[in-house]
Image 1 (spheres, rainbow, N blue to C red):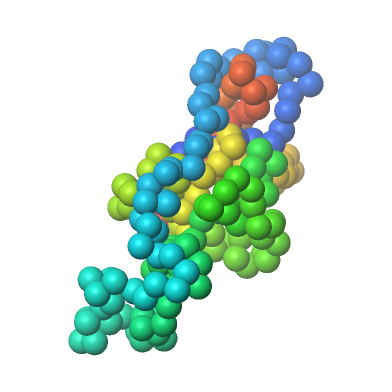
Image 2: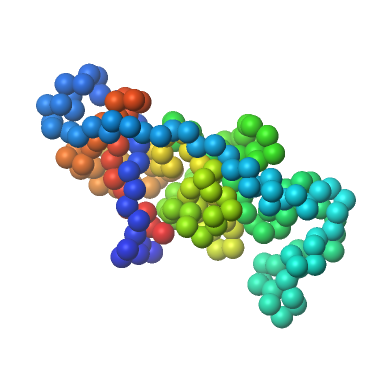
Length: 208
C-alpha cells in the first residue's frame, strides 16, 4: 500500500525534446547540475572480509535459535562459505543497477560488470514500487543510495542517472510508465530539464 508519507523523488523521463525551445516555450525549469557518479562502495568488500571460500560463519553472525526469523531457519550456518560474498547472500542482501535506459541489472560486487538484465515483469514492478532511500544500511553508502524491500529480501540499488527511468509517455491517459507496468500521472508543469544530460525529469511518489 502507499504510505501517506511516501518519499518523493526526481526521476528521469525518457522523453527527449526535439530542441530546447520545446521546454523553454512551456516555462520548464532547468537542472543545471546532476551528479551521475555512483561508485560502488568499498565497504561491501569490507563487510565480506571474513566470508572467504571454505571458512565457516563467525559465531556472532549465527542467530540464536530462539531469535531466528522464519527465513533464517533454512540456512545452514555451519556450512562453509561458497564464495567471498556468501555472507551477504545469507543476509539476503542483493545488489542491482539501473542504467540510463531504465534496464534493471543484477550488479556484480566483486568486480566491475553485471550478471544480466532482470526481465521478470512481476519482480521489476515489486522492485520499483518498494523503492526508497537507503537510510538504514549506511555500510552500503554512498555506493547504493536506494533500497527496495520485498518481505525478507533487501535489494540495494545504484544507478546511472536516476533510480527510476520512465520508458513510456501516454498523452491520451496523461501517464508515465516505469518498471514493467507501473504508472504515475504526467504533469507537464512539473518537468525539469537537465542541461548536462539533455534529459527531462519528473516527480513520482514511491509506494514504500
